Amino acid sequence: MKLNKLNKVLTLILGSSFVLSACVLADNTVKSKIYAKVDGAVGGITYTKNERFIFSYHPFYNPNVKVGELLKNGETIPFPNAEMQRAYKADGSLKNPADYLNWVLGVRADGEGVVWILDSGQAEPRITPKLVAWNVLTNMLDRIIYLPSPISLPESQHNDLAISHKFNMIVIADEGIGNGPKGDKAALVTVDLKTGVSRRILQGHESVLPDFTLPIITDAGTKKQKQIDVFVGADGIVLDRKEEWLYFAPLNKKYVYRIQMADIANTALSEKELGNKVEQYAEKPNNGGLSIDENDNLYLTVVGERKIGVIPAGTRKYRDYTSDQQMVWPDGVSVGPNGDMYTGAAQLPLSAPLNNGVAENKPPYLIYQFRPIADGVLGR
Image (cartoon, rainbow, N blue to C red; front, side):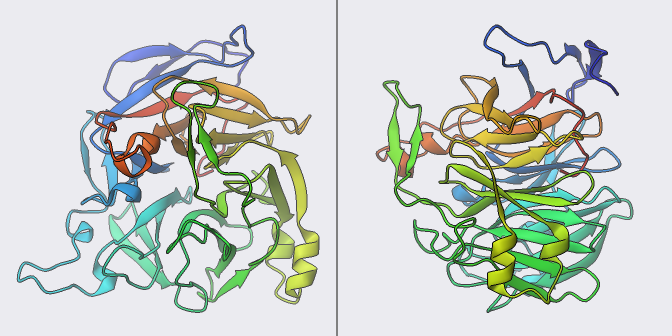
């Protein structure tokens, strides 16, 4: 699909139709649409090859269901099944950690029928972090890859992942705030999908560490403005269409960074040599998720400002792209099979822990759809 066809008739997930176009508003932003309303806060989002909409229920709220699927009739069901959401057996005994999900934010479809679920394992009782690969074509478990110490630390909070077919590798962003508000142990983690061997890389490098002088400010300049003193390391992560460049960014940082995947995959490089390969790509506001379109324009969820931003490849200059007053804390952002992008408003600043003990977060929780500058890349 090409953007010169400005008006596209799309089918809403609830069965009705609307016209979504990349029409530019007076302030140089585009309109977004409410795609669906769900019963819990949305963290990560992914759309599969066979058009199944999978998302994580935001683990900040300790949900009973960790991962869900949004059906075409608007209902949600546990994914991959209800049994995987429960840590305990009927008799009250704890299951084998392989048999359930514990703490999930990152979910990504690989474009070939497998959904990768990133289980950080940090909810009590804590378990070893793991990647769960589920085949949505056969509806069967593909494999589990564990991320034990020293790949994962007590401080680890594995947030999101990028999948490279070209290099047979997954790269994970570890925010480093698993047991405290300062992500000073943030890092990237690589997983070789042929061997299952993992590496922890770039820990301590400026590209994965937050700026500890840059707290999260929400609704700046309004009566609702508040400061959240949490400093999140490597958060958003995404690969370009050619799988040449890996883009990533700490949440509390003024910059997006990038590194070539060939360098990430080169195990002969020392940590210092690898760090020297990292490039400071562009300036940005505090952001959560990252996505990318086929022309390498980057999209960022601006967690404090109810908006999505873009860094065009041609200018590398951030600008606001789409917003909505109900888009409170957009988190993950991902691409569907029609090239559109999707994000969910998790409402974190309205929750009691971040709102002076008063819970103002409430369902329905909104999922938004918007048209990027160019078609998005499925799985990104």
